Length: 208
Length: 208
Image (tube, rainbow over all chains, first blue to last red; front, side, top):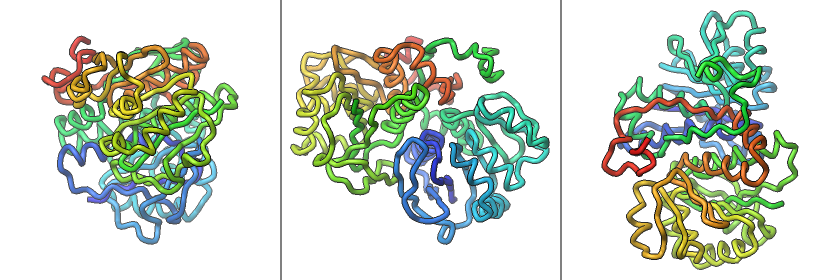
């Protein structure tokens, strides 16, 4: 099984490393044999949104057919939705995937690749109106949402919750439980400031 | 102000990218001017524990004096506690720092550098007994703990909670609130399996 996580310049760091950690922790704790790959258009260093530099495992040229594709967000998505090479690659890989996931503004890349039309999806709270404005997406304000084989999450850190839910669906509750336990993902309930009551806070947060 | 995050081969990915995201999101949302650096012994690619490859910004040779140092964990710490070059560098930088933070088994590197003797500290649940066995650390089973200028957290994802608390202490509740809001760090309460009741689950988890 091939799991690919797409990266590009100005990809947001936690958007892809959160899911990467859950995915690879699941593989480790389950003695899994999935091939977990960081994929970029070209196999050369990628500069993330906040300045972290990473080296993709494969480029589009040598990436195998994927079974699962995850597209993270970040400022770079605003450029990449107009990059026909990347958008075509996503569309072609997605056609053969059993599941396609987005985190944060990665949803706009899925949309550009024709994967969100008529589907429920979500994104970072700051981009919900922009996703609605596309006109053909049923935008929901949830932590994450699944519609058929397309899963999408809210912003940045929400990719962790998305990936655990995906693992539970794919491999069972105990598999997700092990990934959660070994990554000690039992977050503090601390809330700083009063941003959960902010006008722009997503519905899932205001309703808690 | 110079914030350094130490990396080494087999550093756990989320251990350092979680705090990195909160730190850099705070800088961005607060229009901060802190210099956020990924530091390694040598300025060459580092292979993380789960296979992500990253490029440090600076090596020990060209790293400026740090104001804050964070040491993440991962399997690599078991090797690095016996690496005199790295341990000496941590001890020397720490002497000039206003705060030193560890995530997960990064606590063992702080201990090797002489920073945990007689102090309260914590680590990943799977290494609590090993930390106690060192004999001179007051091990607590909290999500994170502060003792003077030394802050330490539980495993992997706990570094996110640690960094938000540190930002709140350093720059105020609203600064931490902005980092939390823009990274949409309002995690799901989902628990998979029943690992919070596991024999080895840390006290902070069993008591919730």
